Image (tube, rainbow, N blue to C red; front, side, top):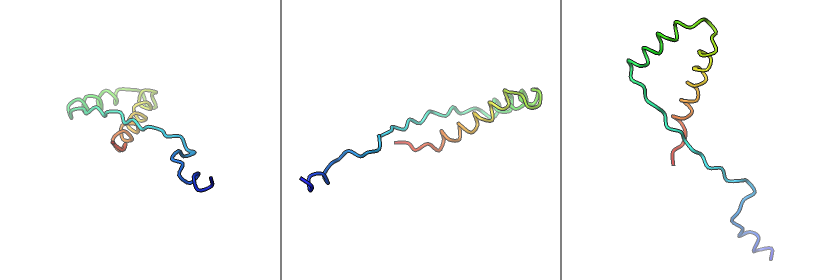
Length: 67
């Protein structure tokens, strides 16, 4: 019986599937327009902070391992 327990295929760690979201590509013109609009916002605006967070998420999605 002891030798049979070594053949168990299930591990104690749960299997978690990784889903990599697609990264939308923006044209240079669109990025330039967004930068101009961002410059119009007040300093320390909530939108600017959210865009900074979004940039981090985009980079994480780019480096996400693909199956």
